[in-house]
Picture 1 (tube, rainbow, N blue to C red):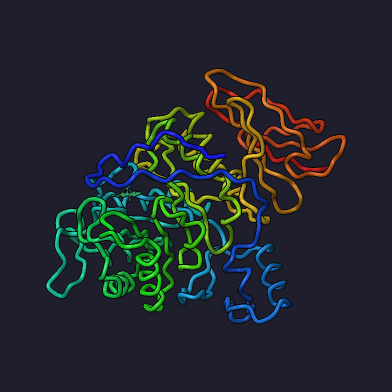
Picture 2: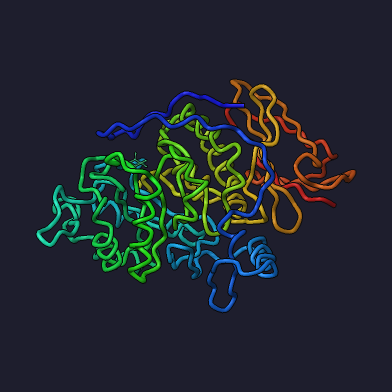
Length: 441
Ligand code: GLA
C-alpha cells in the first residue's frame, strides 16, 4: 500500500524551495534491532559499540539495547561518533516561533523560561538556535561568524550563558552551499565548521539539506558526522534531510542521533496529520542511539486548538520523538505550559521498551496507536480525526497485552483511574486524543 498525502507547507520564512518529499510505502513490520546494533557489540566498561565478532556479543548488545540507556553516554560507530543518545532529546528551538527574527536576547530569555517554567527539570535541556544566526559571509579566516546585529555577543557567549543555567546549546548549519535562508552553507567546510562549533561549546548540531549542489545526501551528512567526531567534543548530530532519501535506513550508521522523517511542520491540523501519516512503518528504525524525528512541536503557536496540541504531544511521545518545543516560551499560556510539561506523557516519550509506538488500527477517521512500556504495561493513544466526538475501542490483546478479564487504566491527561474490560473504550473529542496507560492485572 502506498500512501500519498498532501504536501506540507514549507517553513513560513523560507526563501529556498526544495523538492517534494517522496512517497512513503507503508509497512507493518515488527520492531527489529537496527542494523548498526545487529552488527555491533557493546563494551560495558568503555561504553563503546564496535563491530560484532561473534554472536554471543551480539546477544549482549541486543540485551543492552532492550534494557535502554541514560540520556547521553559515550560510544562510537563507524564514523567515530562519541555520543550515545539513549533517550529522545528534549529542548526548545527558535525556528517555529521566531524564524529569522531570532536574536541573542530572545534565546537567552527563552533559556531563562526553560528553567523557571520547570521544563528543564522535566528534561527540556537543549536551547537550539535554528537558521539565521549567522552573518551573510564567512570571516577572513574562513570561519562562520554570528550575525553582528542579532547576535552581537557571539555564539560562545550564549553557550556559556546556557551552560551556566545547566542547559545545552544547539546550533544549525546546512549540508549545502547555503542554508535554507541563503546564509553560508557548510558543504566542503565541514572540518572548520565542526571545529568552530566545538570551540564555542555547542552540544547539538541540526544539519539541514538545502542547496545540496546535486550531491548525494548520505555522503554530505556523513562528512559532517566524521568532522564532529574528530573534534573530540560530544555533539549530538540531528540530521534534517526531510525523509527524501529514507534516512531512517542509513542515518544511524552515518553517525546521526536523530533524523527528520518528513518535511517541515506548520502550525495547522493538515500539516500535523500529514506528518503523523508519514510515521507509519518507520517504527523499526528508531531506538536508543538514533531516533525518528517527525519535526518540532507547534504547541502554543496559535494555529491549532488545545485538543489538537494535546494530540501532537501525545503522538510525539508515543513515537519516542525528540520533544523540541517550538513556541516562544516568554509568552506561553498556562495551558500551553501544562501540555508541554505533563510528566506522565513525557515519561512515555522517554520510556524505551523495545519499540516506539505504532498505528495498530484505522477505522474511518478513528485510529488506535500503542507502544509497549517498561514493566509490562502499554501506552495507548485513541486518535479521532473526525469533526465530532467518536467512541473508539481497542482490545488489550491488540496492543500487545495478554488476555485478562480486567485492566487498570490511567488517563494520562486527566489523571483519572478506572478498571476496564479487555475492550477499552473512550469517547474521544473531535481532533483530539485519549491517552491511556493500560496495565494488566
Ligand atoms: C528547513 C528545516 C526547518 C528549518 C528551516 C530553516 O526548512 O527543515 O526545520 O530549520 O530550514 O531555514
